[in-house]
Length: 346
Image 1: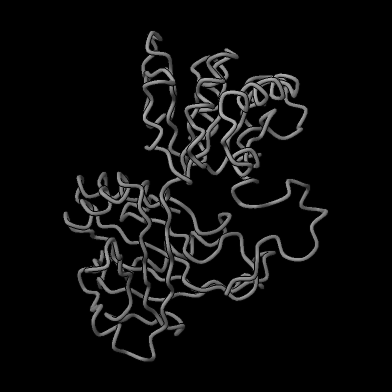
Image 2: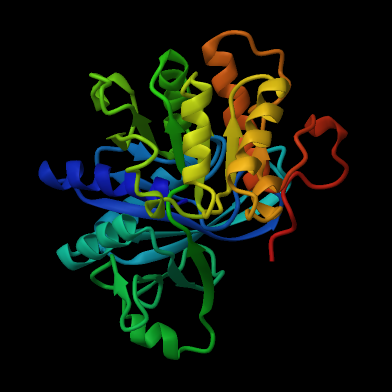
């Protein structure tokens, strides 16, 4: 959800530049099932433009209607949406709509959190009273343990914390998920495009002699020209997936050796199983001290068996496998799943 908040802030900046107010709508509670779960949010500008979504598209018009009083009064309010009578999800959504006017300090700290790839926490205060407005309703952002920042100027966070009748929805947000593509050929471009569409931060690693620029990789967050020996691998963390696709056996081996002391969410190898076995065999010869847990998260050939043939289809299969691995899911048709699609909301 962090990447969605990034987009919301970008659109807020655009709206502010033309003198438009904005409000933030956040799902704070759910009874039953729904398209999205608590914590998801969207931005509404006075013009009616919406950024993000809290459902598949059925709830947003009602949120836009209810947001008008928040624009007018400047106080947050709680609305409910009973999908049992209008949707197929059979759930009741509780949505807090609040003014969104982040301070310069808020924006600076948010950008610093993003740059440092740190977790942060939000606490949203509300009651389930239908269409109730209150200065005790709002969201507090804890970018550090020392203080909390709010985005609504009329939100009295201290009174909210002291009120025993106020409910609190707490949400911990992780850094934006990152995909590191080692390689810069045509298939790397397609993988970059597919991953950025999901909101992932994509870093492309190209050869120092490669003339390509970041403009050659639509949606890329960064382009690093480096060889395996000089690459700073410590910049990549456990919220990162790595895909080796240089199309050079020797170069892939050198990068794999460079990553030997790190643990990632996913490490994919492009190419057939025979190439993988040869690559890992030679890797062990060079680094026999590496523990078994390093190998458990290596996926090769990278991607799900979708019958992919084109570079675009292969990119989809790789992104799908990464998502399944990160979410700890067995990639199978939903029609075979018994019970809820999502786990039960607390």
